[in-house]
Length: 238
Image 1: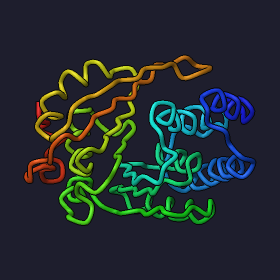
Image 2 (image 1 turned 90 degrees about the vertical axis):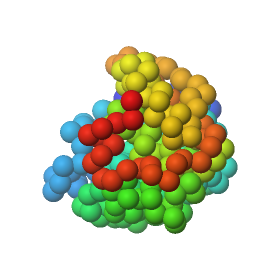
Image 3 (image 1 turned 180 degrees about the vertical axis):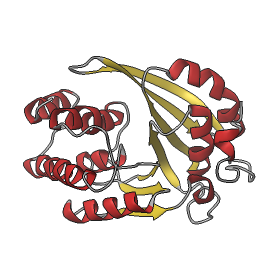
Image 4 (image 1 turned 120 degrees about the vertical axis):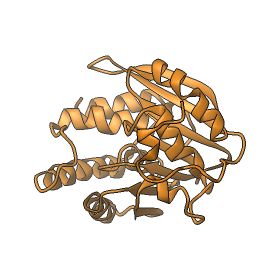
């Protein structure tokens, strides 16, 4: 995917990028590749692939949800900033909090936010499990998202405790979404959520399947969740 295709395909979805925003994606790409030489941020470094599989894929959440208002968004385990930073560039009004367990990734994100001149972003070095028990963050966000972090049953325990009642958890998944959804039903319900829709589409050019799962927070998450670090992964609620 070249930059023109990136711009045109987003415009077809109603997302129009300014010259300044396009410049920000370019700086993001250059910074990612530069830092990737020092630390392992991504296996995808070819420019066309980064624009397709990282930038376009991340922004695809905006095809099905309105990010134009100044909502609070938390991105759990964002790694090199996906999906929240590409979404933030496209929709500058949102307020983004990223939590990641690796301090070196947080250092990268802080540097990235500086060179991109992003406002209303904060980065927290913490495990998602302890972050979700922190009163400052628990049930404070309009929207919580995660992309390719863990199975949905595990991800629900890491993300739903952060969503305020009436808010949304958006899980971005590849092709295995149906199986994950079945085994995650108990976890979603236990944690106060309800699956309201699932959107499927093919990533352009390579035609690989993508699924975006929308879970609404209907009631408060019981206090014991999320459990201690490592527990959700070892013994998921299933």
